[in-house]
Length: 145
Ligand code: RB5
Image 1: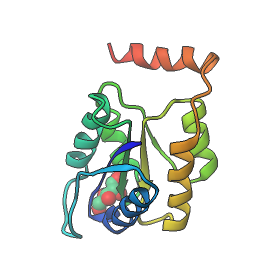
Image 2: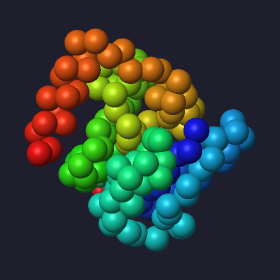
Image 3: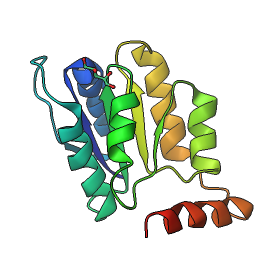
């Protein structure tokens, strides 16, 4: 899968590790920064990854900041993005099954890397359930018009 990934300083170390993990799993990774622990502004990175997903440069996006919250708020401003801030594997599965989430936002400060690695795996492998959820996602899309 082609995956766009980015972080701010709060998610930098986990982003680096997750990008390496994804590459080792055979995915194509577009690493959109940041490149150090120096302080940056998370909306700048949410915009880049969100646009990658919106224009289909990437099939999925992953964003890591301190909590994942700011990244989700920012990414969801981009038309076509359905970003979910996820802190458990079960929520990752539900974000895919029910919401067809195409961007995952993670906490680099409050959730351990081992858990986030499992969350990413669930996010990439769980299919959208469709059916009644499809109707609801279409209603989300209509809010963007
Ligand atoms: C940066 O200090 C922090 O605000 C950011 O990483 C994130 O947690 C925002 O939601």
